[in-house]
Image (cartoon, rainbow, N blue to C red):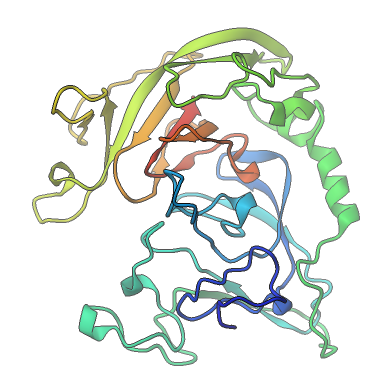
Length: 356
């Protein structure tokens, strides 16, 4: 570990915010990951994930300030919430004889890190605030060091190449995924909303401009998009009304009788006078949505709280369409969120749109 301070030798997105415990030494980065799947199935294309510590959105002019940044903007290497899964390929061939650490720096709660839950070797003694004593080397608790990987072979005493991967292997993988006869298109149901990220998978060119581009703005109440037929050919243009949903986790109505925070889903209804703009639902409440076989629904989920929550849809896989901040800025899914997802991270101060 090295101090998280300004360093002219750091990579461009390496943190310099002075965070406790420092950051991993970028010169000792291990091999990169190549992600090919999620808990919902294969990705449309392999995604190269170089090693990157977590970063937050620091632009205070954005409504999303304080959230964890998107993966391609330095948000992290592989971001997984509870119930999310990732199928990754790692090539250890250039690290023979070396010992590697799988390191975790995800904030808990997400995105507002609480030192009560940040355990690492040499961390401060937090017993006076209800936390743990200073973890000693080789002992827990430790939320940052997840796994030790020992690679067979003889160590040559020279650090392995940082973020190593085999470009030829990656190109071969891409060829297996990104065509109408590739792994993504032929091994699972076709997606619902045609977007340009799926052009190669279905051998077509989906609309890239409004109104039929399959992307929601902050004020949209319906979504227009081109579908994909069951035989994977381009389908019709549809316009589907959105179902307004809500998450709430910070007001008194979401605490249980023991005073514990209990984030709840509900129905977004817009502001009405001085009344709340949503109605929270409990487990005992009747279902609000019953889908017929083959029916398409578009959910626009408004997060009225403060923490990012992974929503596990259980009976349906969903397609992440996009997110949109309450200031109107549109955020497309990370490349490793494309395709089908069973669990989706829903963050405050923005709407998340999914199709099912």
